[in-house]
Image (cartoon, rainbow over all chains, first blue to last red; front, side, top):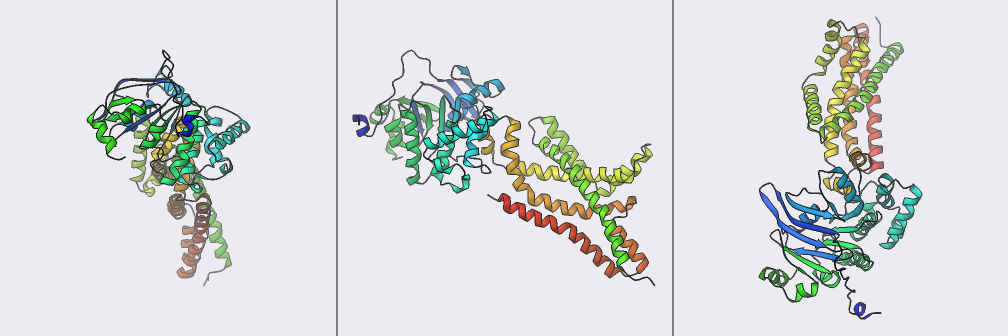
Length: 262
Length: 215
């Protein structure tokens, strides 16, 4: 056991100097009608890193995540994922994005009428045109990864929240995305169930998956994330390695946020 | 004096075959057109939304009786000599589709937006989203109101008697005119209608259980 593991942290993934970031958010603004939610957000995310976005409700962090995944149209600036510009109105661009980025939601959003297995294989057969047998094999593999190998034939309503969320993660993983986005994935869970979901995420981070998560799990962000981004009033207020962000906040807003006991 | 006999009962049952045939035409024609209308109502294309919306408003705002007159007498004045069965089938299809279209639109819209998002995020095209995710869920919600409306249609087919169909209700009138025993005649008419509608309700309950409506 390494010192890091003994201390409950994982080795930080170092960004390769000079490498192209996998996600580039450049001066993005977004408004819902008269309400401006993002004010010129810029952010670069390196391949193989876990970035945790933290901040108060209404700070724009979930909106940013949804803009990256083309679920919201941006009003200014640009977003690039894997070198390709993201545009909601460009079908080809969205299609490519869907093959590169997976997303997990707070409310799991499993398909209630399909078994766990079919939830996972649906896109494999319908989008990737894999045979049912190949798709099933992939599904069983990813279910094993999230520790739910025995739930393939269950329906979503028969799962606990933690299990449902792990199935949702497996559903994204099955499509072998290059980036996984997590939108407050533990916020709807009982405290005793968050642990099992966070553990799956930590395993993924250790395996080098690029992950961006919007979260309120400060302890988790501090322990596992490579970069923590603090958003406030629709802007990136501060960003850096968790050691710096948590130990030495530069702005009064972050200091206040951290001391508010979240 | 003629009294109500098994001959009359057989006559009623034979007439009920028209009721059944007209209902089946209404369900099939109305179901197909209704599905197209429902999809048009929730389409991303504004023109489709407008056209299907206008169709539904016009048909829903017109009595079935008037639609039937227009189809049968109106079209024949225009030189189209259409048989009563075609006029009746056409009118019932127009009428049923407008209502089913609106019922099903509501069912499609009641599938949560997050289901669209999740299926979008795993790369399904819009057609695939409908086929695999949205319509199966909308169908569960649609069963009770659809069956309820089908029962209405069975009873509404009686209106076709005005263009000459001797369906169940009209046959009852004819029997009554010769027997002068309205109570027993119409009790049998009612029983036959009930025998056609009740299995639908039973089937609905069966499917509801099977599909776990409300989950």
